[in-house]
Length: 184
Image 1 (spheres, one colour):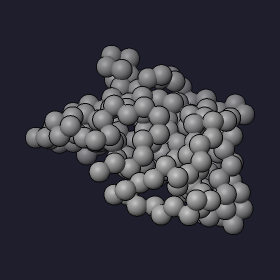
Image 2 (image 1 turned 90 degrees about the vertical axis):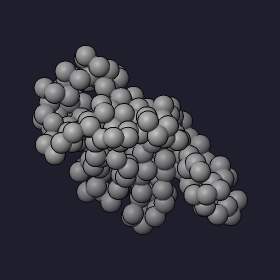
Image 3 (image 1 turned 180 degrees about the vertical axis):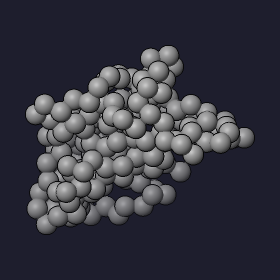
Image 4 (image 1 turned 45 degrees about the vertical axis):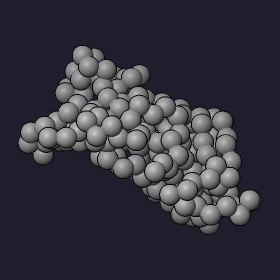
């Protein structure tokens, strides 16, 4: 499974709308970097956050998720409390080709601050804005900067296209916009 380079990502964005909006080169001046890199694409986090809270003593249950588990914040900066967690989403909308799997890695700038970013793989023929899981592993409040880089996506081409893609299965997170909560 080769990792696909910048010229492939650029061509797929231009010809097939694989990433919209697409930033042609990496932006770094005074911001946490985002845009096209050598072997990936650094996505930006939108200013729309769901920060987990225990104010209502809700129980987090992936089979019966309650919106009472978090508070909503729309702002240029989100403060995640110590040892807490937030959900956000990418500004970019992705359309994954049938023979490609996309893996997400957190940005080192955040990782070095104890902020861990998790995204499950983007499967063949999945599309949407990516819901991002952000953990503050520190005993201190942590800032997340909206409209700046949050994670890097690596594009891997499979040996051949799968028999069944995410679109074929009618996956439950297909076409999502904004933060998508757990679904059964």
